[in-house]
Image 1: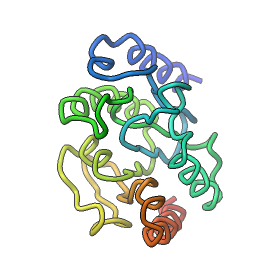
Image 2: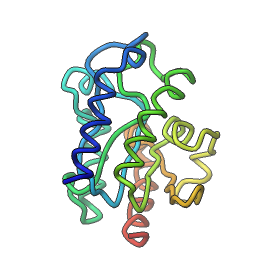
Image 3: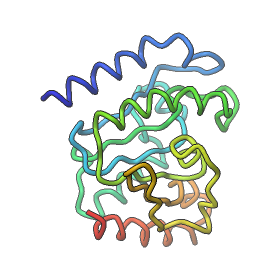
Image 4: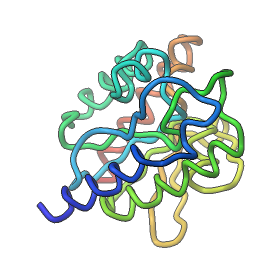
Length: 181
């Protein structure tokens, strides 16, 4: 209960942030799931559907992500799903400035949740958390240990939708998450 209240406090700070919505649209999408999650899934930024609803990963990419989560025997209620950028960017991919600012909020969320595995879904997630570029296509399925945390690198679900051959890689990567737990 203490972690849940602490996470709600961080999320309230995100809702009240005056910097986050600059150059973006829609409502804040802080994330959802368990404050006691063993696994956190981090994407890029909300899409149009997410910016309307305030919920992360509910569009086509989200449907695939949620399928992948269930395929490894986890429920959406026992993981946490979020992104470094909490609003829909006006122009596609978030800017470095957007990611750097959102990282502050994301780090506070991760500090409260303290998951066993932080799953980075694509380049923006990897940069937003690790503050370094990661060759996701080459390094997918690998663990990076940094500052006492385990980061699992994989593709963004949108890549699996755009390129069907990558969907198989996503499925294989997600099976590895179970062995890490």
